[in-house]
Image (cartoon, rainbow, N blue to C red):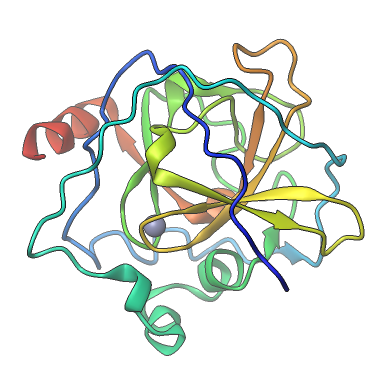
Length: 208
Ligand SMILES: [Zn+2]
């Protein structure tokens, strides 16, 4: 499947945790989402071609010498580190069944890390109830941590979103949320996320 990068977006963020990348503790939370096993071959969201404005200044993340190069982790290694459901969605571009994930209706204050590399990828402050059965956000935690690629696997164009640090598939982004500040709906699979409380987010930020 051909994949290529799309527009680089810089959205305004109410909090600027630009340098937050979750490091270490790789195995600490693996397996916590392992109970989610209902996957479907395709998503049911409507097609859309996002368009958005860039307002947020980009601050490059710090590169640490002890940081794992997650882009070099092999598929076999991911299979060992992740549950079958996590592997199917995050590493094989699967989609969890709507309303089957643990976060679609979650309203706790905090943030969500990538299940593969622990990077903070979404914040509860940007979460909204889309009614789709998947966790929905109007912007990423930080624009720099999310990458995009064209996805026409269902026969119509969609924009896939993934974690830049480890290339984990997270979901898709659509521009069908006019009531949100950005008009965007990041439709994300719960199984690709690990929630952390606001206190933990602050602690992570302090470590960076
Ligand atoms: Zn990741």
